[in-house]
Amino acid sequence: MFPRIDVRKNQPVPASIKYDPGVSTFENLAPPRDVSVGWKIDPLNGLQYRWWDGRSWTEHAGVGPAPEQPRMTSVLRADIELAAQRMHVTAGAKREIARLRDVLRDGERVLEMTRGELDGRTGLLALTDQRLIYLSDDAQSAHEQYFAIDTVTMVSFTGGMISGNLAIGFADHRLDLTSVTKSDGKRLVAAAQRFIRPAEPVPATTQGETPAADPYRVLRSSDQFWRRSNQMKVLNTDLTEQLGCGESLGARLWRIEPGQASTMHRHRLTTEVYLLLEGTGKLRIGEESIELAPMDTVVVEPGTLRQPFNDTDADQLWLVFGAPPEAANTVDMSEAELAWHYPDGPQSLPPELT
Image (cartoon, rainbow, N blue to C red; front, side):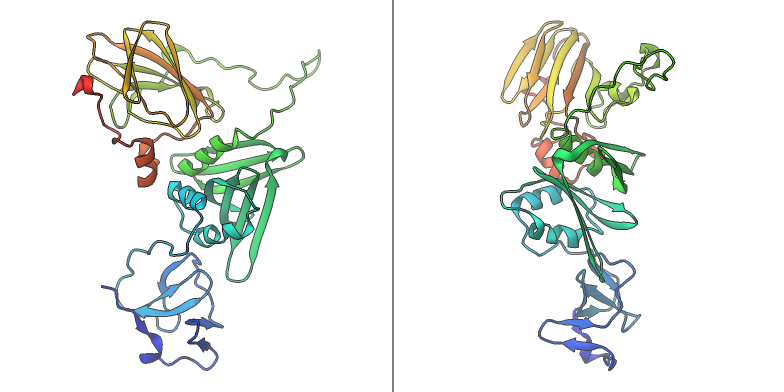
């Protein structure tokens, strides 16, 4: 166990450092290079660790390897706590999460949050039902920016397998948040799409003008990339991702083989449409199972559990599409997010297949 000892019992405090036993913090000590909350190399004794609370050093110190960082102990508002639990990465933004409630208006509700860098400062971007809020605190200063949601004309996420950039567009300028975790960034963008006012239509080009780039794109069936899903190993192809429009719409083809099922899941924001193209379809919605013929269509609202499955002897082909899109990669989800999306687990089967 990592011992907690008062530094005054084993290490003299230099005269230049003011120690206040009433609040158990040290003043006039330089902050650590990494100012996120946690155990850091003790600036008074390089052979031990000391707890940095995000603003100052405390008297809690000890020897041995640094343990796993404890969860934030400050009491968070319920909406902030839920949004924090959905974040895949909170390191580097915990002080901002704790401070967020202090800058909210009466009745303002936090929907999603992500950590990222803006103008070289690591901080927190929070989406509420009224604004986008960016907070960045360090030992020397606190930085705040607010953007009314009705002034935002575009939000998008681009990036690689793990992280990327989140762009926020306005009528006359644009902000770019970098080093954003992919799952957190995509989830915030999907939630923000509900509030974004539609862009003004692009006027038709006249002779001599350069037309807009890529007014349409074609994905040939021979070029579609098919893969098996992480959990249920169902063949699928992500159409919108391959067409480059996955930030505004989600659409996949799913080929469910006999004895297979997709995941029993639900979405927080996405309204999803299930169109059966081939085979005899079975769709479990809550505790009810319905049978579908080719070209039958079902719409499922957010918050409703659903699961297509195949208890026949022939393949099914489904087109599933919806908006706004939500991040759905179970590999990127936190435990709390997995439990909400898949309350029976991501590999549960319907009674017809058990």
